[in-house]
Every structure is written in C-alpha cells, then in structure tokens.
Length: 462
Image (tube, rainbow, N blue to C red):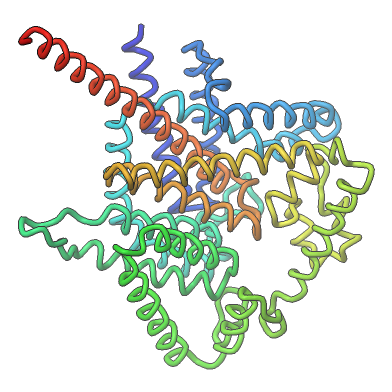
C-alpha cells in the first residue's frame, strides 16, 4: 500500500511539472485547458488517501495558509448562490495554495528535488531560446490566430509579458545558482546552450522592459537579490549582463524606426526610456500608462479606505463580486477591458478587498514568514559549506521575490499560470526546509554516535 501511494505521488509530481512547464511556455492559452485544476483535484484525492491532513499543522507557513484558506472559505460560501461560477473563479486566489500543501506532502527526499532540477535544466534549454520568439508572435499576431472556443479572451497563442518575465527571472537565477559542471581543471565549461539561453533571457528582458514595467522589475529585483547574496561569485556576471543588455537594447532602438508597432501598441525609444524612468519613480507622462496607473492608485486607495476605515474591515466584499464594477467606477475606470479584468492589478489589494483586514494580515504574515525562513536557511547553508542547498534556497527565494513583485503590479495570482507557479514555489521551499532540517538531525545523531563510540573505546582501552 505504501509503495502504491508513493508511486501515485511520483506520477502526480511529474504531472505537476508538465503543467508548470506548459504555463511557462504557453501561458494563458495553456491555462484555458484547465489541466492545472484537474491535476489539483487528482492531487487532493491522493493526499486524502494518505490520511496526512495534520501536515497542515506541522509547519508555520502551512498553518498560516490553513488559516488563510479557512477564512477564504468563509468569504466564498455565502456568495456561491448569488455569483456561482464567478465566486469559484475568484476563490482560486487562496484555493491554489493547495498546491503548496501537496508539494510538501509528496516531496520528502533530496533525490526528488535533484531530479526535478535536472528536468528543469533540460526544459530551459528549449524554453529560453523559444520564449522571446513566442512572446513577440503573441504580441504581433496573437489576436488574429484562432481563439479557444470556450475562452473569449484567449487564443491558441496568448502570452502576457509580465508572466513571461517572471519565468525568465527564475530561469536567470537558476542558471547562476546552478552553473554548468566544471572541467577537470576546475574551470567552468562554456556551454552553447547556456550562451543561447542567456541570449534569450536578454531579449525577453528587453521585450518586458518595453511592454510591462512590473515584469521587467521582477527580473531586475530577482537578479539584484541573487547578486547581493552571492556577490563574490556573480558580481562580474551581473555587470556583464547589464552592459550586454544595455548594448543590445541600444542597438535595437537604433535599428528600429523611430516609432514601431507591437500589436495594437506604438513605441519609440523616448517612450521606452520614459517607462524605465517611471519604474525608478519618474513621471508616467509619455509612457502611455499614465491613465491606467492613476486609475489603479485611486482604486487601491478606495480599497484601503473601505476596509481599514470603512464597513468591510472584517469581511471584505467576498468572492464573486466584480471588484471593477464595485470600486472601478469610483476610480474612473480606464476602459471596458479594465473593468472586465475584475481585479485591481495587485494581488495583495485583491485579497484585502475580498477578505478584509484579517485575510490581508494572514496573507502578509504567510509571505513574511516564508521569506525570512528561506533567507535564514540560505545563510545556514552557506556557513555549512553546502553549495547545493545554498543555491536551491537562494533560487527559491529569488523566484518568490520575482512572483511577488509581478503580482503587486499585475493580475498574476488570480490565474493558474501565475497562481500555480507561486504556490508551487512556496511548497518547494517548505519541502526543502523540512528535508534540510531532517538531514541536519541525522548528521547530529551520527556525530553523537561517533562521540559515544569513541568514549566507549577509550574506556575499554584504559
């Protein structure tokens, strides 16, 4: 029975990796196949068969998610009769957290993580060269391609620049955290795949810089975090990346005409530079984003006012109501498309609006505890000389930072292509912490045993 359970868990983890790769490569078009939701239901069934429901109480982050999910259920069930499918669709913002629990339950050996990382490395060989091409095709001709019959807004090739940028940020940190194997003389090999991969990363970052400020910022923050914590080893790589990326961007603007079009948007070098300046706190004037940016800030202010200082302090508006319809008009909705998105372009603000201050506090506590634990684990791994755990902890932390940065500016957490990745990263982090703690206890037990044997031998020889 135990072998059968372990086999089912292994198959589920493979299915999850396939789904995650599908989201990273095809984004929104893949999401509307609903494979992630199917995998979640199957995983929940396997988990219930294992009778390990008390696992939620064994880890502080899982416990906080349990509270978060419980409060989410309380804010969803009363609205099911009124909003039906809309309530379920909006509730995934907490329900996808089940992926974190399942990953922790099914990943309990370091060998599983090693195999997953090797599979991810092989995936990046194809992902990095292809993704900038797919992104440009999606932006240029995606709307003219056939649409998925049951999805009005998703075609067979529909990629969001912000989502792609988060995947690129995780890939960039992975390549730096786990470089190619060294040659016999101790020097790193120059891999063709890594060279092509970094070229794809540079191009993806440039596209994100042009199309999506939140996505571009997620790449910058993740890489800067990695370089700050591993500065001695990668600072020259970061400097080379910045110089080469800036050179490629400058060459792109020189070659392209003064005004060029990507899909329905028109860009120029001045607009791109203004967009980058706005990230650093400059004016939005001339970027083409000033209307939506102002609308979002006003909307976020309304959400804070009606929760912290208004009638929705404890309850929020619940799941199902269209937040753009409830709050958007008061902020001056920028367009019909913005109203149709149902979300204030900020995952934390969406949680505050729907779950009130209690849900918002639990959400912040969950993420703060997770980030602090991963940071402390990374420092312990470095001090103990464990390159594998140090690199893994830092990659997970940087990936979490990238996802949290993007969800603070875009609709990321509310969809499976973002939500499943976000919660799976948290689950992998918790699983890695538990395995590291177990291995540390084993080493201590072996050390005590060796000391005891030495004392016994010394006493016998006395």
